[in-house]
Structure formats: structure tokens, C-alpha cells
Length: 226
Length: 246
Image (cartoon, rainbow over all chains, first blue to last red; front, side, top):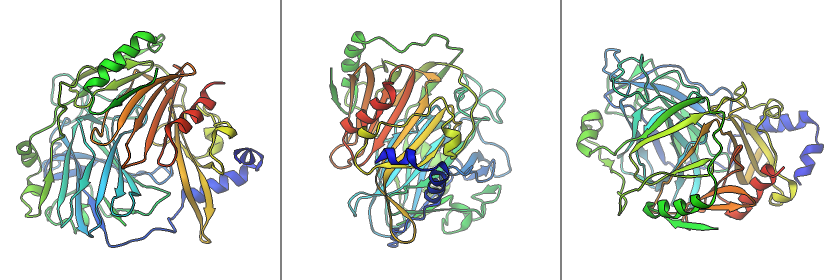
């Protein structure tokens, strides 16, 4: 079967890939389960260091963040990083399976599955550019709860804002990295049933105003529904 | 030569150390740049409360947990060919060397990806019936650091393409050696190492509850990761072998 692809004109293959790259899960079933991811860097405030960047690559929806003291000051280039989910609605249980992120950039990739529905695959979430701590697989809490897991510290190099001193721990040169920040991304699992949307209303600094109410647009990065 | 290790990982060190005495390590000649990665210890709930007061004081329940520690000391990382397997719970320094690679571009254009020195497609007879290439990209990297191929059975549901029985292939440059593979998810699965047809193989199996399998395969020059929820490790190893033994 695979040999057939080699006989198909390239334009057809490219068209096919474009079609699949914009694939909207026709089988997606929104059953009222909703989770939000929140800025993962320690502190009340997170500062967005750049806009959304998906680079047209298979729907990678990514945002770069750093810790902020609320006045625009970076709290620490080596800030603690937490994986943070907030349950908004729904009773189906979900589990996060932890994997290494492929390639030279360091971090974690979580695949979220619906354990109430045959481990149906929902979406990927990744946190990158961190000096890693051990992270277990974990269940996402329900009932309006936050689920928080420690992921490690932001990588940093000399010259970063609020660089802590001591031994720096940068990313390898072969990871495209411009200095200390958290790259937080999500991607729908193209074969399954979750829907991920990104919060495009985020301002440069967010978490300000009503950081306790994740239903406000300023306090979510991605929304997962299934 | 097959080595199966039930996670968590203290025993992984002993088993893989034994294996490492048999096989030679990765060639790291021509390394250009040295560096050091780290692993850090988990934080306490008190520290998490101090870092995230707005969460813990919000009135909403918070599920915070530190990882279950291994029953024994984690042991030291172990090199296996070009790979370095990091025991579950390890804390410490991880030196590495970097090798230069050609310039590339971040892209999801198959034609551009085919120009990459990493690009390889599996042999037809290594793929499960009906599985074809459905998408490709370089993930967050350049095309000389990463070529990501998605294979699946592709159907139409009338409104668009639908994939099923999918598998992912990541071709990665060995521009950082050793390449670290962290042992994770100790409550669910196993990790095993093997030498197959002269290739270094590291299999992470998420266990019977979660049927996902991830297979790293390397000939010392290239590093290929094949991952799927649908096919056994042997099928994924066969796919990788068909791309590396040419």
C-alpha cells in the first residue's frame, strides 16, 4: 500500500498533507468535559514573552512565558515550573501520560486520555526549556479542582533577566532557544476526540486582576474539551 | 540479549550496565561543544504553596503530589550505544557533547523535508496493511534536527480525512550525545534494551492499561523514535530497522 504513495504525483501528496494538517476531528464529541491550562511559571503573574507561534507546523499552538512580579520584573530565570490544569466542568476522568519530548530541547510531553471511555486519546500538552524534575503519570482532578505537578526549573544562561548566578544550565546549542522562558504548547491528537483551543486574548502580562477565577479569559492558555 | 526491566528503575542500572559491557558506546568523535544538563529534586507542598499562592488560596481544591520515590536509590545514568537512560528519580548532572549539523528550516512541507539528510521512509513490507504517510513536519526544530512523519490508515467520513491506527516516526539528529531517555511512568510500564541486527533499541511500554509503545532505534549515526498505540514493539522495531539498515 505504501508504494502507492510513491506513484502519486507530489502535488496530490502535498494536497493530502495540507488537508490532514487542517484536520478538524469529525468524530470529536464534546461531552461537557473542560479543562484549562494555566501559565506554568511560579508566581502570581506570568508574562508573555512573545505571541502565539504555530509556524504552520501541524497545529502546534505555543506560547512563551516567564515569571513576573506583577510590575514587569522577571522574578527569576531559574523559576520553578508547574504543570497546571483547572477542571471547569465534566465528570469523565482523564489521565496524563508523561513522555520525554523528542529532540534536543528538554521538557515533558503529556498525552491526555479519557479513562472513562476506553483511554480515548484527547490531546498533547508540552512544557519545554526546563531543567527537569521527576514527573509521574497522573489523573486530572475533577470537581472544579486544580491539578498541579512540579516539572522543574526554567533553564537559564548568564545574561538572562534575573539570572540567579551560580552554574548556568542552558539548553543545548542544537535546541533553538533564546534564553530563559517556558514554551507551553498543545496539539490535538489528530486521531481522536478532544478539542483544544488557545486563548488568543492574552495580553502581555496576565494573571492580573482576578487570578483566582480561571473562567476569565486572562487565566487560561489552552482549553481542552471532550 | 533482550533485557526487560520493570519500572521503577533501580534495577535498570544493573541490567543496562551489564549490557553496556558487551556493546560499545556511541561514537562521539568530532564532538564540537560540551555542555551539561541537570535533573532537580521535587519540591515540597510548602514550596508549591509559596510559589503559587493564588492557586492554593483560591478556595478551589488543589491536587498537588510529589512523585512516588523509588524504593531504592535511583542509581546512576547508564549509557547504551548513543543513548543514556536516566533512572527514575535521578537528581544530578548530565554532561553531553554536541555535534554540528547542516542548516535546515522549520517546515511541514514534505518536499522540503525530503531534502533533509534525516529523511527516510519505511519499507512497504515493514508497514501494517493499509498504513500510509498522512502528514509530515519538523516539529519545533529545523528539518536537519527533526523529521516527523505520521503514518495511518486514512479514511473519509464525508466531511474530511479521518486517521486511524496511526503511528509516529521521529528521525532525530544525533547532534547531542548521549541522547537522554528518562525512565518515567513507573507505575504502569516497562523499559527494555536490546541489540537487534546491530542496532541499539530502547523500548518504553506503557503497560497493559495503556497500550502505547515507544521505540528508540539507532545505528550510532541516526536516532529514530517510532511510537504508537496500536502496534506491538516488534512491529515498530521492524519499521525502524527498514529505515536504518540501508
